[in-house]
Length: 300
Image 1 (cartoon, rainbow, N blue to C red):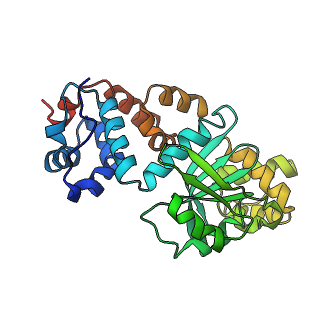
Image 2 (tube, one colour):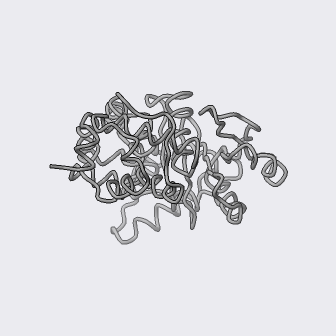
């Protein structure tokens, strides 16, 4: 396997390279075995001059990821570190669930890990501002038990001074680890059941209502949402939270997810987890990992 450790990349294309880890590129490769965007970026950024075409697609992804980790740590890099170091490193797919872009009111939580309780990790990378952070945290405090912000070392000090003391602060280090600057404090007593309810899918809130009340309201389908929400909002915050987390832990099929992750490069952990329920796409993508990158960049 031949590849240069130091990439001589046209700096105008570093941001474009980071899009390799998005559905825009990876979905096409899973479906067609080819991405015109990937080929164009590799040609224009000087990647083709640095690469051995016999390199496997999986090794190519890890190679590009390591370059981005050192030079362009965007949101995906942070999500992937959380997936590898917290979900898969600290916890386990047998006991925990990771959800991305989880809807909370008008916000979307970057990463939620459920492992007996709920842990939200809001990412503020080197390229993010803090303009929306207060509103985001206010929303998360209505739904989650442990609220955390994951950021860079030079941003952490500012956040420590600005964030509520109950909010945890974590740093993604340049050694590819996550360092705890401040632990979060339980927020369960402040959870608002009516807000939490609106984050659930229909089958999820029906399961919660059935588990607590012994059945589903006997009303026409058009009234199910309203009646279930009325019952849900009567629950104590800790009961509403704990019952919901039990259901959310079943959102992704972790046995299938584990089998895919075992055959995937570490650079794709976050992408795979975000697409956990699309079995067809993930199976197709796994089949591409051993293909030479030259055949993907210039298909026959």
